Image (cartoon, rainbow, N blue to C red; front, side, top):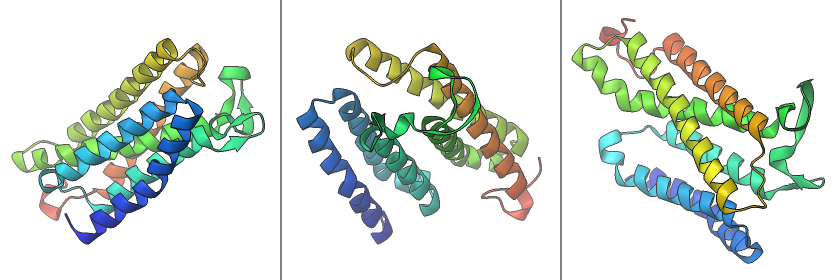
Amino acid sequence: MTRSHYILIGINALYLVPLAIIFSLRGNWEFLAYIVQVIALLVLLMSTIRKTQFPMWLLVLLSVWSVLHMAGGSVPVGDGVLYGYHFFHVVGSGDAYVLRYDQIVHCFGFFTATLVAYWLLLPQLKQGARLGVIVFIAALAGMGFGAINEIVEFMAVLAVPDNGVGGYYNTAIDLVSNAIGATLAAVFILTTKLGLSKDTQEV
């Protein structure tokens, strides 16, 4: 790893460690579990960085996603936390209210997850795979990661009766937000030919 990687780890530790202590003292096991997941992901990313060769900008996007997620569950806003903050009304009410902070984080997060999937699939282009096919698979993978996230949230509902996950409409809108993020990432990749040399830009 380079010096930049260690700096990024340090920046993540600056908020993860204090939040882990705070959530432990409060008995907020739901978000403590999320912190454990983020730490596990960070360890996985850094331990495999020689093979994955993730660029620093992608690691920064993942870190920003982590910060937004942790802020959503820890920053108090009104009678709740930032995740429930309503930006402006587009449609719906209650769990079905659009647009909330939660939905924006889901969109950004699985935009980033789709970029991660694409980067892992990128070597396949050198083996003759078509860009359009790889991007389509990456977008499906991004939405798949989003589905796994909803399963984790469902486990939190089962394990922690007093949680802030939300109901059926919240889950459905989260999945839609994930799909929007993945689709935007696919469009971004196809438009910019992300990570490609001139001889591998065939769609």
